Each structure stands twice: as structure tokens, then as C-alpha cells.
Image (cartoon, rainbow, N blue to C red; front, side, top):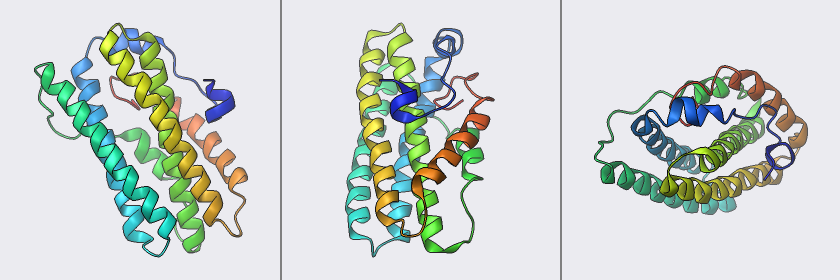
Length: 199
């Protein structure tokens, strides 16, 4: 899978991130990953609460909540199996910076489309990071696990893009997505240096 053709990400993660940063602190990566899954479930719940009238969105987000919490449970089990403890939630500076690009005001349509594209962006970058992890980590079990989740995240990314296009009536989703990609490329320049999924 090429990030340029499928995910359209403009700045790939350097595989050295795995060797130089992640492998020296697997515990930190796993704890951060667990909370990423929990936050993804929370984001889906928020979308349900904010858009209860959009039945297709509610159904898909309901399925997503269950899947993300299943991922959380599986990551947590890996943490326990390795003798670690979940610990406190880690701050996700990447996501917080990305959130600044979401339109505030501008009507419900613009806010919904931006929230869906914001969600798609996080899934796309997570997918790309999981691919890099699966291909470069010196741990057969984690390599297999992250390959599986890479496929899952790609599906989530496509789902959010499709929902944005479904509910956009006056907004050019492809144009707005390109704007998100350009902004994300600037944001991610500062990341890929710590043992977190987006770090």
C-alpha cells in the first residue's frame, strides 16, 4: 500500500523512527496506542451525540465504537502480557494541532464535514504509522498485530471520507481534504521523534 496513492499523505514517516525511538521503549508506545484507540471510540460517540438525526452516521459510528474498544482491549492485553500497566493518558500534541484546523462556526454542514475529515486524517496517519511499525519492528507478534490494524485503519479512513461526501451539500470535500493534507504535512514535520503513535 502506497501512502501517496491511497492515503494521499504528503510526508511519510521515516522507518528509523521504529529502530531509533520505538524499540527502545515499547511500553510507552503500547500505552499511547491504547489511549489512541480509546480516544477514537470517544470521537465516534461524540459524532453520534452531535448528529443523532443522521441514521447512517449513527449506525457506522456505533460499529466503530465497538471496534475501537475491541482494539483498546487487545492492546491492553498485550500491555498486561508483557508485565506493564496502562498508566495515565498521554497528551496527543499531533491531534491537538490537527484539531486547530477544524472550522469553528460556519454552520452545521461545515462543522460536520470538517469533523469527519479531521477523523479521516487521524485514521490515515495511524494507518501509515502502523504500516511502518509492521514492516520495521523487530517483534513478530507486534508486526503481525500492526499489519492487521493497518488494514482496519485504512477502512476507517475511507468510511470517514465517504460520510463527509455523503453529508456535504455545498462543500467541495476533495478540495477541503487537500487543504487538510497540506496542513497535516506541516504539522507532522515536528513528529516522528517520540515513542508514541503520532509522536
